[in-house]
Image 1 (tube, rainbow, N blue to C red):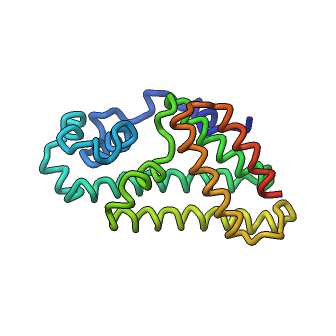
Image 2 (cartoon, rainbow, N blue to C red):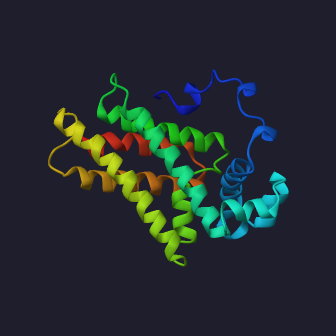
Image 3 (spheres, helix red, strand yellow):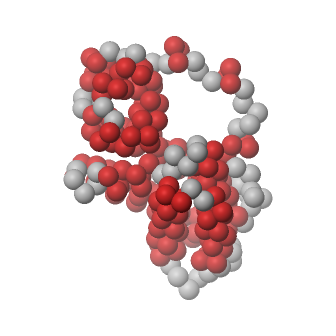
Length: 211
């Protein structure tokens, strides 16, 4: 298995992380929102529960976000920034070929999911299945996030084609479509099966698709 995000961060001591009392109200809410959306979904997460678990006043919540839906989009935006930063960190590794960069990225996501007890899969996928059909604002936000994700994959695949590492009988955007669908589908299935080996099998399929 390639180096995972967990492995890279293993040297970071717990006391180096900001303590809760040192965090701003907004930061407390965003962190707790991520946790509660994973655990309970958007509909199952209430503003009152967020306020109770963070100790943040209600006025502060509405000052920063205005509504629960706006808060959900802010949490989603943070999640997508994390994903793009993680993908970029793998793409920037010159010692790896294109396929190893992408399988390493997938493995890093899978490791985080497994370490969470098969609870924290992809928040984009979770929100897509729960709220995209009923909220046009959320659907638009999710569409934009997926376009950015797709564009980042296209860029990596284009560079791989130029280097002779990725098949050229399919356009980069077609390969990115397949790869993004594979990533999303793998974690949706694994939420129910909780089968780590199936995730490894999906990772092993990436080179088959790309070469």
